[in-house]
Amino acid sequence: MKSTPKILILILLFTVLNCSQYHDVELKSHKKELELYADKSAEFVSEILSRETYCSCIMDVQESLIDKIEAEMPEFNIKKFLKTELKLANDNELNQQIELSKNFKLSQHMIPSDLKIIQKPQWDSIVDQYWVNGVSIRKSIYKMCPKGVLSISKPIFNKNYTSVVFDNDDGGCLKIGPWAYHQLKNGKWLSE
Image (tube, rainbow, N blue to C red; front, top):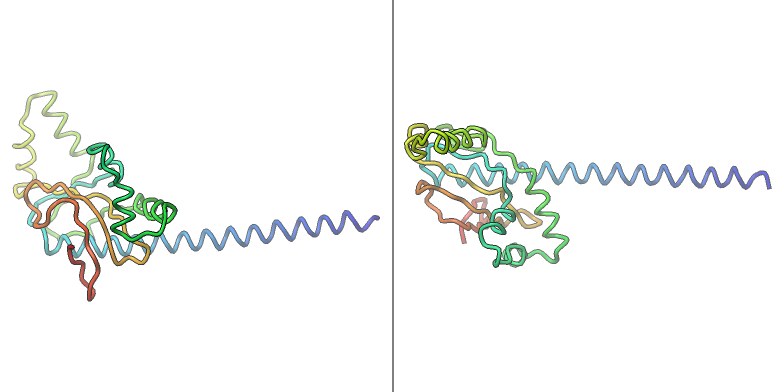
């Protein structure tokens, strides 16, 4: 009977160690997915902006595509649209891709060197000047960004990073329209 507690302790210890190893594998897998998303989103944004824009500035948008569309068009089922366009098997796959997109970070290495990133606080300051002092938003923006301002949503990819959906507000300085759906063909992102 005295060996029973030892056996229970060994079983418990073995279980804890296995759970810990499983958790480590899961964390490493998630980290790899985040790195892959960061690489693919940087590649996509860089390619699209290098050939499709003549803007002066790009806003660092914090809002997700889902949140933006749900706020602007609540009657439109954006999740169903994404699942169909990106050929995702189920809601779980879609939710995984949405979660990855929340990690999108716009950075200078993604964009053409002549494109300036406007951070949200800077944009809010321009808008506040309009409301407080009656300063023309258009004049303030065009003084800082004479060719216009672009903003893009955080891109949402399919599981194998060969299709992507994103939205943009371009102020007339982007050659593609809003609601861009692109596919990777022969190493290039092409709009569909």
